[in-house]
Each structure stands twice: as structure tokens, then as C-alpha cells.
Image (cartoon, rainbow, N blue to C red; front, side, top):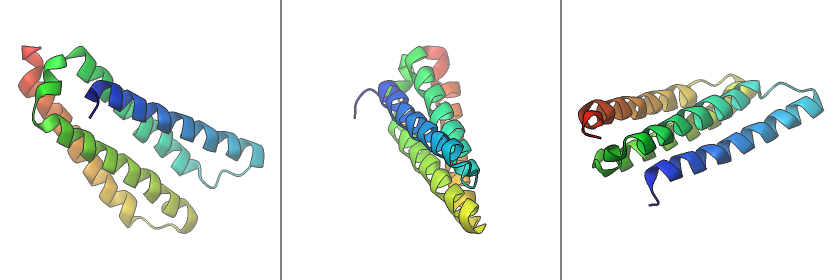
Length: 123
């Protein structure tokens, strides 16, 4: 894996572009059916991981922690699940995927907090 901080920011930027393109489509088509998916792409899949990448860059000791890669993949899985789940929510009101993915995303956030608390002071 590339440096986790750069990987986080790079993946987050891909989500930002995808979210912006969806927003542009919604604006041109005057159709806000996928608004919740757009919000998930921009806030959940872009903003939070970008912040995690910045944290890893500012506290380099966190990158060496054994849980750093686990935290990255859990967060990415949760973010993708929330985006896909929000699509199904927007189309047919289905909640289970977005709810389950939210729990996974929260686990990723809890791991980030644990990494920061347990290793942040040593950076």
C-alpha cells in the first residue's frame, strides 16, 4: 500500500469528483432523487477520509501502528456501503445496507480515535 495518508487523500478526492459529477447531473436534470447519495459521496466518502489522511500526515507515528491498515479498509468499506446504501434508500426506501455500513463506518472512526489516543502523543 502507498503511504496511508496519501492513499486516504487520493481516494477521498476520487469520491469528491464523483460526488460533484453526480451533483452536476442532478442540477442539469433538475432531479434531486439521488440527493442522499450525493451527500454521502461528498461528506462521508470525501470529507471524513480526507481528514483521516491529514491526521495521518500530521501524526506520522500513527502510520506505523498495526491497526492503521485495518482502520483504512474498514473506513473505505463503510463509506462505499453508505454510498451504495443511500442509492437504494433514494430509489426504494431500503435502509438495511446504509444502516449496516454506518455501523462499519463508526467502527472505522472508533479505530481512528483509538490510534490517535494510543499513539498521538508519541508523534
